Length: 207
Image 1 (cartoon, rainbow, N blue to C red):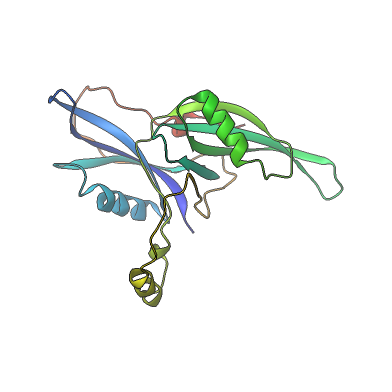
Image 2 (cartoon, one colour; image 1 turned 30 degrees about the horizontal axis):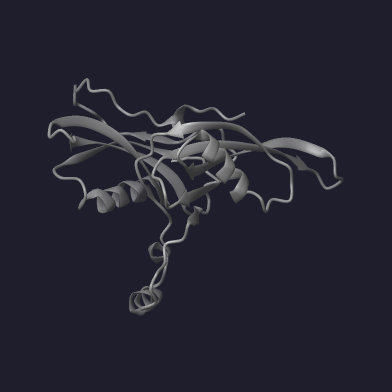
């Protein structure tokens, strides 16, 4: 089953003023294992990053759904809580789920989360909204688990794709109850002191 993984990549980036800077950037992707996540990030970034890059860390990330709008590339992590009832209708416990939404600011992130969860049949509370440093998201791909025959059909399909205003991405298996995240950290011999982007997923402790 697929889960979400945050993969940190270090490389030398050319800035707008033409200078170069060593940076560490987090990417979010769907994969089945840590090994698959590492292989996929090399596949996805191999043609976009000039020069060599190094995977410095991989962390399994607890996300229920991702709501991507096509008018911005800024991401916010929203923590949503609601009360789960038992079979007798009594309150059993408070459940927390994390969502990622693209928005221009916190206010818009709140509004878009409410809009995206409007079909829920229970009352929920948006407990927190924090800015996320995620650079890009590589969602679940059906071809990763399709048979060769199904892959051939997909290639032959000439139906034109249309980019929706909002896309919802889920990774089956990403909604787990463990509070501790599995983390892979690569050995790093680089003594570079350049400040790195921090992934708030790894630091945020859910209730």
